Amino acid sequence: MNLNVKWTWFHRLGSPRWFYQKTQRWLPWLSLLTLSLLITGLVWGLAFAPEDAKQGNSFRIIYVHVPASVVALAGYYMMAIAGAVGLIWRIKLSYMLMRSAAPIGAALTFIALVTGAIWGKPTWGAYWVWDARITSMLILLFLYLGVMALRHTYSSSEAADKASAILGLVGMVNVPIIYKSVDWWQTLHQPATIKFTGAPSMHPDMFMPLLVMIIGFYAFYAVTLMLFTRAEILRREYRASWVKQLVTNKTAEK
Amino acid sequence: MYFDSLQQLIFMDGHGVYVWSAFIISLTVMLGLVIKPLCQKKQELKNIQLHIKLQQVNQAAMQEEASDASHS
Image (tube, rainbow over the protein chains, first blue to last red):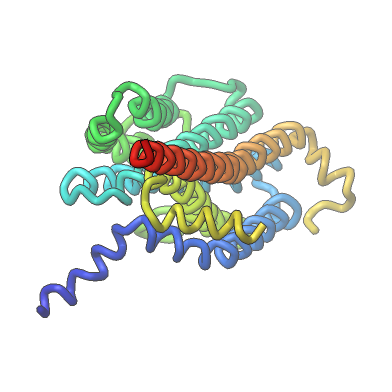
């Protein structure tokens, strides 16, 4: 009896219906929070933060480049873990989360690469160099795209989910390589600005807006993950009675 | 504000082109990340609506067939 009570939360967490209904309530608040964080961070970083002594104003690109990169990497762990949970416990919702995480991660990695290239031009004199950090980031983009593409290569979605989850897990090797690439190899890319150990190598006037942007990007990630997953739930659960009920109620409202 | 004028904010000592294009590209991609799932959701809801309608039509046809069979 006691065991049942303990595990109900776990099953509820894995229920697409529970997720769909809860996120409906969370989304407006979280979107508002995201928007205010991003606007604050953008205005602060673009117009109020002082310029860098060496790089001048081009350093302001950091306010999208670093948050996008950080969340693209964290998002990869999220996707791989969701895939692993799906493989181990066969929870439907975790596969839906994995599917939804892939396009968001790919888009964020794309932002990191493009803004990095634009930043590279005035700083290094080149848009692209085959350096360890940039190349490993490009591999991350291909991993995300691979997970997205695998969906269409199988006729059964279950087989496609399993294959995507395995690719996601194997690709996890790449993530620590990206983190450590600036320390392990001689690269053009500057070393990490923020480290878990020790203070950031930045003046607080520059660092605070960056922190706001990073939190804003995490919140943005949560919002888009919810939006994508809700669409995915409808796509896969169209036979479920609660989904039909939802649609009939919606048409009745009109 | 760090800059003296709006013009300086836009120009950024020659780096404006890089900074602003980086931000505009990023924000466009992010906007796409919000619009895409919303459109998908709308489409899925439409599909489900169609699915329900088809089911209802099928059921009605089957009932009619059954009643025809019992009459004859």
